[in-house]
Image (cartoon, rainbow, N blue to C red; front, side):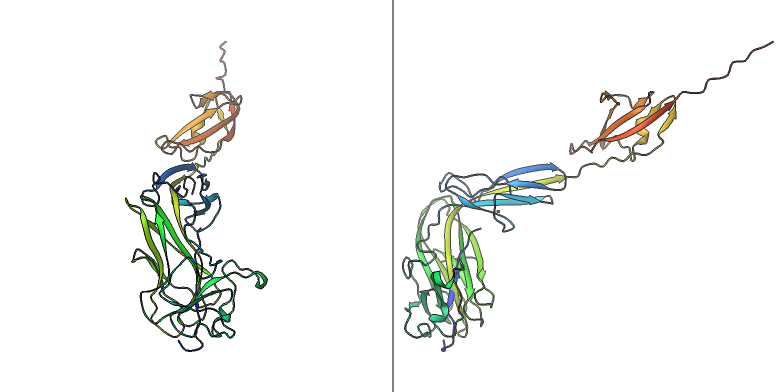
Length: 358
């Protein structure tokens, strides 16, 4: 790369519905590969889902990317939440400098002038990209520390060669366990953003990681991986696929590889019946309460009638004046309407006048 080329930075981040959690660091847990599923059936238009507690796991996240132990949903559908276990990446935030990982790129330490990364295929670990290349913009690491407390990031001047490993580390995994692999990445120079790829044991994983051209705009990228029946030690890596020399500069931070426990939640929101009543409000002799129900439908609904004293009456044909309460229950869903009252006046039937004869 010509003097003006910017380095690259990488960052990882981990971020979930009720009944879902990250898996414990234990081979007896089945994670993303065979996730547990809960079904939540609610009468109404919304419900709040909650995560569970799993010892040794934290950072609950939901399928929409929000964090926290609860999520309010307003539609039927499938949701999930998950928790993360201990991050097994060593020095994933680069606090300890150029240690704990390997790279096919060449390491360059900061010099007195900002030209350490002028050559493509080089990287540095430092607090400010502009200090390693005067074509890189100045910005903080992913955690956004102030200049007085800046922390390291991996800063890269990408090579114009595909499938070159930028960062790699051997990790030990458990069998039959799902893992999340995540990173935070930003462009260090706006030209030709990086095209990175997760890799495990030499095989590509997940979608291409392409940050925006905006420098210092840290973005989160993640994928999942299942260890299968055999555990062991595997190399995990970030590989650069961008073959353009100009630009192709980026930074990486907060790399995470950790076991996860996920739980799916199938939500069914059933509508609450809305009972509507109409007139008349008076009758002679007796009154059938079912006649006041709009859309009276005994195939779909069960109806409950109560008198002024709150007593359930079996026969909706009433002969006494009073305030009656009616509720409607959907036979299929069991959802019940709010009670609706109706005041009925029963007038006596007129009597036939007596006839006298002389």
